[in-house]
Every structure is written in structure tokens, then in C-alpha cells.
Length: 124
Image 1 (cartoon, rainbow, N blue to C red):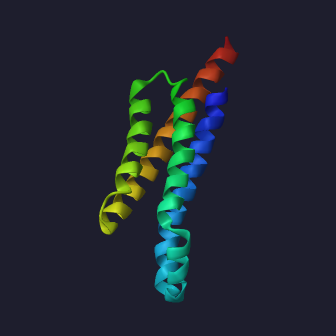
Image 2: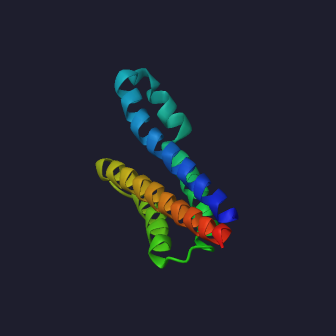
């Protein structure tokens, strides 16, 4: 049952990451005077925060996953986020969006599989 909580945390973290990736560039377009904020916060630290939360959720969720391909997708999403730290800016955005979508999809599929399993167990 804890795996479901980690999947939910993973989905939440990935959705927040995706929102961050979409909102920040738009915000920077309309508020160029916030450039100081970019240097003050250091978006790399924000990304490392999302990676840390996501990796923690993936680690715990993956312990209880029967389907190996779901674990591979989850860890691939984290791997893409880590690689994106070192990528060129435009490629980094694509990698972040792709990784967040992959993580959301894999966690959602895992939640669905767990819910179906629990329904079958309760029925018997």
C-alpha cells in the first residue's frame, strides 16, 4: 500500500516539475526584470530538488513493482532529468518535459495496476 503513496508523490513531484518548466520561461518572457531572481535562486538547485524528490519516490515505488518495464520507465525518467542538468538549454527543456511526462505516465500506470490488483484481492 505504501507504493501507492510513493506513486502519488512521484506524480505530484513530476506535475510540479512540469508546471515549473512551463511557467518559468513564460514568466521570464513577460518579466525580464526578474533576471536577478534566476541568478539568485539558481534553477539548477530547483531541478536537483525535483530530481531528489522524484528519485526518492521512484526508489520506494520500484520496490513493489511487479512489471519490470514500469521500473525501467521510472528510472529512465530520473536518468533523463539528471542528464538534462548537463545539456544545452533548448535540449534541456525538451529533456525535462519528456522526463516529467514519462514519470507521470509510469507512476499513473503503476497506480492503475495496483488498484486493479487490490480490487481483485478484495473480490476473492
